[in-house]
Image (tube, rainbow, N blue to C red; front, top):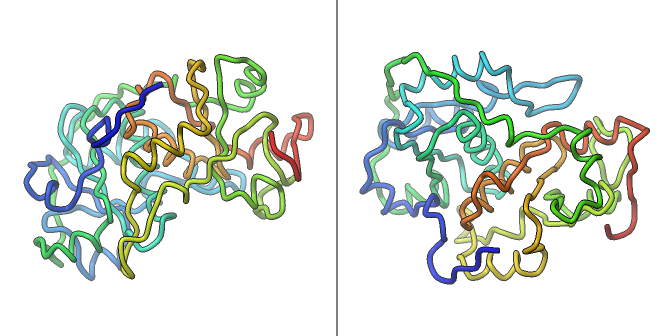
Length: 287
């Protein structure tokens, strides 16, 4: 277990003024094109989520094929050892899920210096930092694939490790989904995976002002994690509705100092699990 009080243990979340002092190979805006065109960080390129995610069997936000991912990321002009900054809107915590998803994709492909802007575009504007309506440009390169398949697990893997003390499973959906009060139209059943701990992603955010949300400070996040994380577990698995918010959970644990070798994302998440009626589901109760 990693408990460090003060700054975030792994300095990948940047405040706007700190980000403005750094040099990035590329700055990536994951908002939709119409928002990007109204104004963006000077020099940023636009990479909306549908560039690297797709719907599969009615389940949204699934990663595209490895060949397509490599093609898309090659268009950014950055290699795995280049510093990259990602941002979206900070108006709602859910918008950070798009950032978390791209963060996860880049680490999956072997990128080593990926940073996230705290507060999103709105925080950048509030700090009166340079913006533009001119489209950012980046040279296309030929990226060599270095996918880390150990970061992704499927339903068979999750089923196999249920009850294994070396693994702890986190459900990062809102609690109403965990308890099965609400669900998504692409679910077959409502509830959660047995023995999963509820850890809603919204818990990690606080409203900075009327314009945007930010990640809570390190002490607050540390307190949340102390309450739920089993320090004896060797691996932590994240799931949500589809895998998008699970990637945000992955980012938060990375930010708090957890090595990626300990972390895994259940791709397809509860949508996939709920559709297989041979798999157990718990509803209206804890764990």
